[in-house]
Length: 463
Image (cartoon, rainbow, N blue to C red; front, side, top):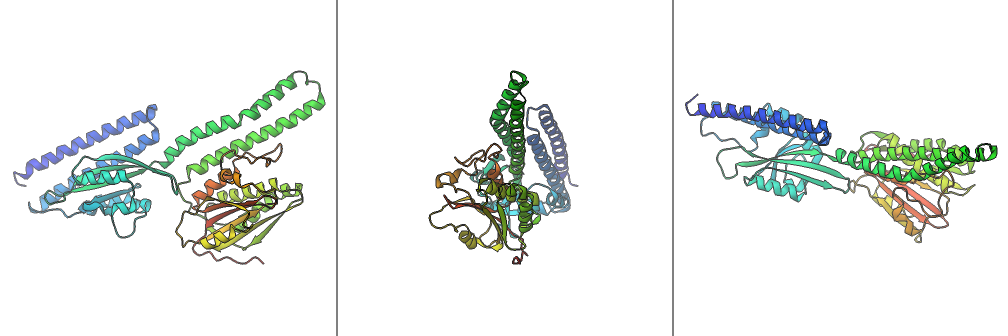
């Protein structure tokens, strides 16, 4: 090693030492803040992971640069994008569980790990960052880093078609000593959707629970006070009050279960399901499970359509869709009427428009959720038609709101929680499907749900 390279080697060793010390101090501070409650623990862990990854990348960069200087002539220059081609840096970046990419001159993606490809939907060929990530703040930070400015931490949120919250660390890297464009931008993305949703869900749950539980709790307190007082020896009044108290307790149980179910669904709404299920089989199972409720009102629930309808989805959540829609149809249909559930196993977007316009031009219609998938995708559809009074057009936009009930549509002392359609909407959104309602006063209401089918789905006609 020459005399000139010896000071460089010593400098790199000192930088590595300082980097390790700084990293350990930062991790310790963040861990203490998270454990003491001064900072959200999930935010602290995300920051620790990002700092650790950047430190490892910097350490490998310095080590690899030292090896190159020792083995190559003094005038050797690294090629653009060589950061992701180095080993073991390449293997480390490929295995990172969060998205990392290197952006070069002109905002062109030079390298990206598999997590980045999946997160941003990158194609096999790298292109411009602006074509995959349309966030002005991130693009502005990248442009600044490519001009030699300091790195930045950028946060952005999207709410359509699916809500997401992302934190982006934009880090400047000088990958070569000479040339017109020496700077690169290293992007480390952290998906904070789950932690953001968790914070909001806790607040929503407490607000909703405290509001909706106030009435049944006040009712129970009043009946208990009466039973302890002048109605203590009145057997007839005591039995009547106990029956009402049982109904109120059951209503609170259903309300809490629905709130917990809605919170879990909203928490995972940004993560599409990967399993498979048969929408036809689940619909038939739901009809069988709700047979006692239908029999109590002498209602017949008939199934029509394809014998199989294979879809991409989570079976338990799809069962919950069918249960909510069919149970609502039974509640709001008149005694002795007929409910029709039909499933279409393989339809396109043009079929969706036709199937959601079957009550005539006078009916009110609303698309509660649009399919968030390419136009060429195929779907399976479940339609549930009740025999109720129908819903006026003015009520349709609010049907999927929490706790909203249409005037005159309450179902008696054991009425629902008002969360069923909100649950259906969020499950459909998670499955990247569609949710539609069509209603005509005096003729009834049709709720339709479409779910992406499996690529090899081949519907069979019902015999």
